[in-house]
Length: 80
Image 1 (cartoon, rainbow, N blue to C red):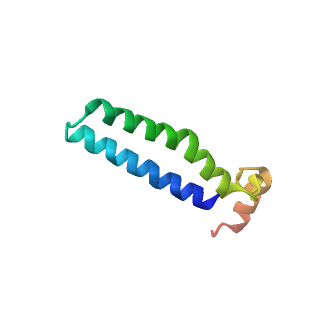
Image 2: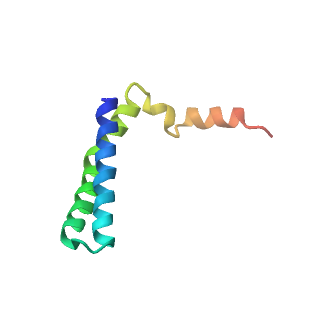
Image 3: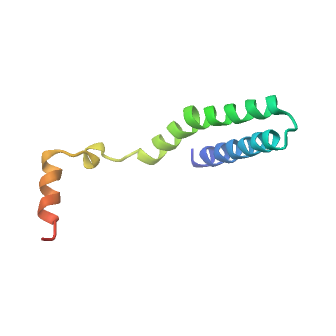
């Protein structure tokens, strides 16, 4: 999974860079816009969910929520 995320990130970055180059150099505005849009769409709807799933696997979500117990722990740890 780690290598899939890395390869997908590199592919998205290259596609985005190519699209920006084509748009800025005015070589092919239509293709540049398509490349930028597809790379951003792939990044948002494919890469980010895969990355978040990979990074949060095995973690307890309750540790990151503001529950009364966690607020009490924070108050007990505060340096006054």
